[in-house]
Length: 258
Image 1 (tube, one colour):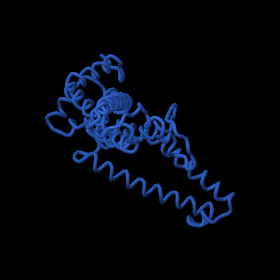
Image 2 (cartoon, one colour):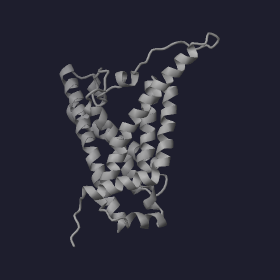
Image 3 (tube, helix red, strand yellow):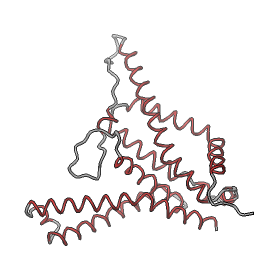
Image 4 (cartoon, helix red, strand yellow):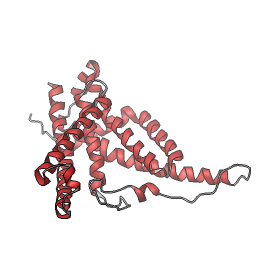
């Protein structure tokens, strides 16, 4: 009997398996995130940093069982294709993680503001009443690709979410590729990639204006052209990164099974 490579019923069973096996750890994890957001609330830099760092660990550890001989045999014996397993992993480490992190932030911010105002009602405590604010949603730059962007809202922002997808897809691949210290090794590889990208941009600058540092002393027209070229180059590369990492993750996961 021929088995299809992709079946939504099997995917549903994979989601079910994930929550059955990890529902306790998931409740604890998101409960801790909500508590942390009680204290961070409108500290935009800290909230952004926590989402990024926690997301990297979350994605890098998703496939941790395939690196243990006993657990890996059981995992690859699951009656589902590697494409289905990877699709579930992508949904869990991107959409699910993002939605749950936003929910934890909302709960934490509401709870933190409520507790702050309750404490502020006691005159002997050095706590002041504060209104409910959502500075994270208001001040995060939506388009970090743009050199001259001053927008202050992430609403309807595709570039912001693409940046988030890049980190999640990268660390998901690192979690499959590296057997140990997945997060650290993936981060080191990412930094190496950024160095290579900077060198590529330097070569591009030399090709356009003759010298990288000369770009900043060149005529305005050349400088604007150089800035646009760099911006377009970075956008193209970064928009292609998530599907690229997902593709190589699929081949690496299939190779691990063999």
